[in-house]
Length: 280
Image (tube, rainbow, N blue to C red):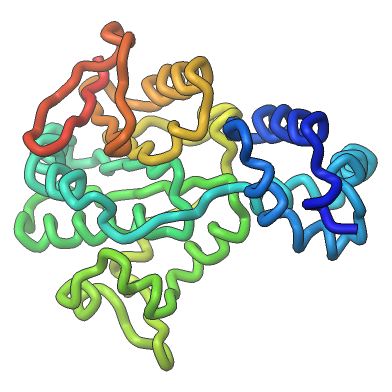
């Protein structure tokens, strides 16, 4: 029996509730096809006939890794290098010079990429920093640390390897940056150079959980992830992100995301093109 033949309204609603509680993702109405397409392989491997059976199995064996596999399968890992371009131009030309000038000689620059997926965003940030340092040799004396977090274990495994197929490399990466920051390791495979990779650390993290272990940041990227959450959860995440930012630190959101009704925490900064937010 296939999952597509057994997924009824009540099952779908129960799964929607499970997914939102597990990771915050709010599935839209009529997304049954998305559930069936992404969970079909797991259903077949586990020899489960219905979504109800799958949820019962997750409850029965909480340490089996099944729940994590289901969340992983439902997580969207759509990403590319230098996504939308202008945020990275803003980072290099406006934010990094300002933040670097404020850092003390022993203060390390700290950046959080909060939905790092397979690593393209934090490595893009690292490339920008590398290029900024080459143009400003006296800046960032204490170095930099980029923390990349994601809920998907498979995406993090890919990110930590720093190795990409040509299809992934071609999505947003210029030939100049490919030549400068990558080394070809095989037919159609490229690896991020150590100078770019060493400043990035990847960790598994659910945005619903505490951020206290991360420390404080000068810059946070939370791009193209809030669109999957409810309005209340978005506000909660943005409030808690503010708690990780140093005063005057900057928040980058996705092109289709906006921060409203939080004037006590953030100040909008128009960059033309693009908008970023400064923590009060």
